[in-house]
Length: 303
Image (cartoon, rainbow, N blue to C red):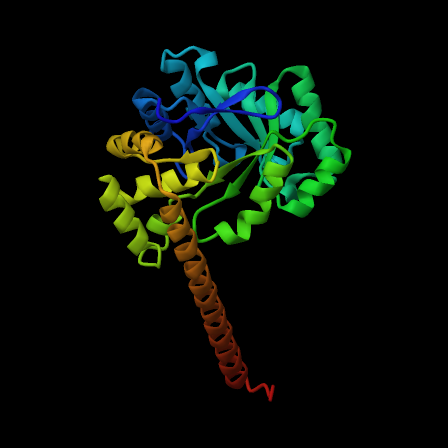
């Protein structure tokens, strides 16, 4: 496999690329897509309660014919239906049709109720009971990680965060903190510069690097994420794209190319922030105009 496994701080190892089930919905679609990912060579499936397709992922995993120990399963506590962590993991295990998951994450710090230390203690108990091999968090920032570590008996093995060049500068403190405390970090929405905000400053260096490597822009982005040390979580319904994502593990970016993507990402982040400000200002202006028009229509004097 072109993507190596990474040793976590608790001694377990995690495959460095995962097939994610976010936005796959439920029914036969996600079953087929997880099955396809496993058939092309993915050995890590990432899900969450909130995606409502753990059962479908479980069906695909069982029907794959692969041994349980050959598939790494990550899922997340999402506070679905207001259920607590101990109840939720048991529901997830039932949905997935397994006796343990390899990595269990708190999906967001706001879900750590009644507080982060209490929620984390519950996560530690799941690990002690053997229901999960490794525990971690998702979307936690440095301040929340510090609260967690202040009382933790077991350090988080991983923190899954939003990561691509347009958000790299913002996320860098989390990445540096992870390195300091031997926490692995994983990415999500890594292909957003292509799928959500195309046409930005990244296009030029991406095209140039892709041409040199004989690769595609999405492969270059995944190679950039890998170069930053992250576990990649990605998805596609296309077989050829999944195969391309696996081949991206063989791509080697130069330090100059990584720096070029970092700089283009920082420039794009500034532009996107400005666009967001203008958009919000426009929405507020239109909302105010509509409210004023309504008041005038009703004969109300608000000026």
